[in-house]
Image (cartoon, rainbow, N blue to C red; front, side, top):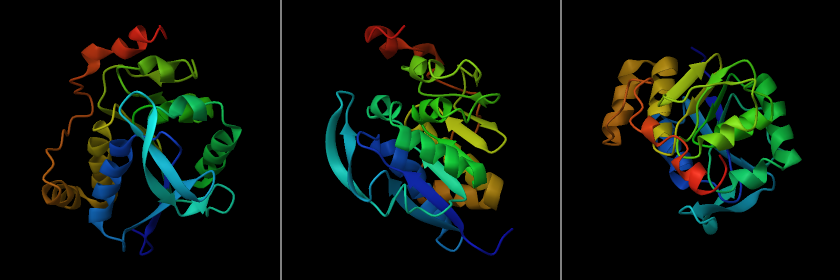
Length: 220
């Protein structure tokens, strides 16, 4: 294991989902800054508003440390989902940033509809991946070269970790911590946060809700 801390770039964009973002970051922070250093990054540095509920309103703001232009090369990327995903799917700056960073990152991770952004950038082609179940179509519409897994809490394929909706990102993050730092560290992180870890990646209690919201929105 490297003696240098892993540099984690947590991507922000207007309308990101708060638990997608802060759930994983809380768990990674528990590991300690000597092991993982967390950095926030967005198209422009400064405040970026989070999504409120599913209506697409913008709420509390988070400060991005770096812009896409001045960000260093990160060892790990964290890409959240949220109502702002639809806008970012048409944002060349976002897609170019993900492509560029993924060339050198050791790990590329997403929560919820964040996998749609990775797919639109072409990064998941030839890989297995999953996404938020209620709006699964948002992800699958981005690439037919991805093996989309409908029933999975999270999916690991090479350096890519993709998770289902919102809270599933915490289960994925604990699996990453276990992979990188051992089961004892992962158990410590779960205990510290008083979180009940769903350890089986293939056990997806929300698979039955596949595209429920997407159908209501007329996406499928």
